[in-house]
Every structure is written in structure tokens, then in C-alpha cells.
Image 1: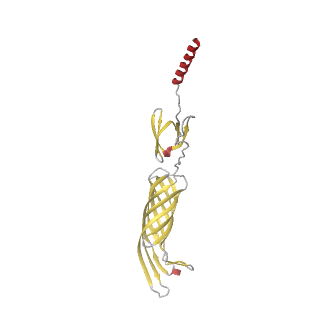
Image 2: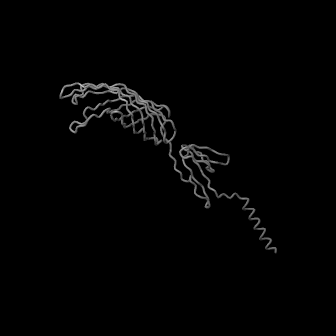
Image 3: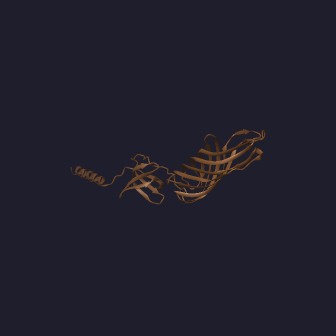
Length: 260
């Protein structure tokens, strides 16, 4: 009887000891930030590409995803795998201030089709505003093509422009604006019967998306509008007739390019 009573007493003592311990079987999320902070607790809300909320001992903390370096999940043998475990974040390193260089290829479509390339160099004062200068080469009209002489009656201009640009979001993908304005020069080419050419002012506003968010190469995709003035005078080599074109181009511009 005494042995049985001692056995019950031991069982009761062990149950009390187990109940008094903090038995943790759930996962614990450790959130590391680029600033060096580590938050230990339970992620209760996570909007991919935006923010997360972690519940810690002292309350709740909201963190932007761009500030989070990694999440490590501490779990016991009985806990299930978290959807946040080993989640890879895009490190935001886009250079918002300082010098930049951009390059793009464009298609110019309207009643006639053209294309062009341009490059610009400038300085970003902050993420929302930067300014620069650029040059380019634009074919405003492809009239005809001959294998022995290439493009005939092609209206070509060389723009020199100033630009302002800015990026709206501090994220790996951000909408942006770009406004270019300047003067496009045209050059006569008597070997192609272009006896006189003069360019004119142009303006090219656009909006687009920058992707990458890296310190180096980032891709840009843009759609905009191009207004251009120019005039061309051709001499028909067979009849000696003079053909003049004073043109105001209105084009839809689609660009793809890179920014460094």
C-alpha cells in the first residue's frame, strides 16, 4: 500500500512539473532586416511584395518587405513547415541618387512607321527627380528599300535633348515618368537625292515600369507620345522634279531599354 501511494505521488509530481513548463511546439519566425534588427515571434500577416506583420513579446511590428533580408523559421519536431520558411527576398539596391545612364530602343508608330535609338546621361537628385542630356538617331519614315542602295527616301533625324525623370516607388519594380524635349537635326544626302533637310523641335513625354531594383543594370519599359517637326526636299533623278515635305509627326512611342 505504501509503495502504491508513493507511485501515485510521483505521478502527480511529474504531471505538475510538466504543466508548469512552457512546452513550445509551434514554429517561431525570426525576421532579419537590412538594418541589423532581428524580430522573433509569429508572422500573423504577410502581403508578398509589400509588408509583413510579426507578433513579438511586446506587441506587433509591421515591416516593409524591401527592408527584410531573410526569414528563418525555428521549429520543433512536431510543428508543421511554415510557408514563410526559406522565403527569398529581392534586395532593393537601386541607386536613387547620383549619376545615371540610360539606353533604349523605340518604335514610332502612326500613319507611318519608324524606329530609333537613344542614350542619355544625367544626375538623380532623389528618387522622384533627376535631369540629364541625351542624343539619338530616329528613322521617322521608311519609304522603300533597295538591296543595292539600302533605304530610299528615308527621313532620318538626330535628336539632341534634355530630360527629367523620376521613380515613384522604392521597390524592385517601380512606375516612372520621363519627359524629353529638344531639337532634332536632319542632314541632306545628295547621293540619295535628298537635297535639303531641316529638323525641328520635338517633345516626348512617357510613363513606364522599371524592374530589377539593383545597383547596376535595370530594365525599363515605356509607352509615350512623340511630336516632331521636320522638312525634307527631294529631287527626282529622272524628272528633276522637286518634292517637298513639311511634316509634323505625331507618333505613339514604345520603348524598351536599360538604366544603370
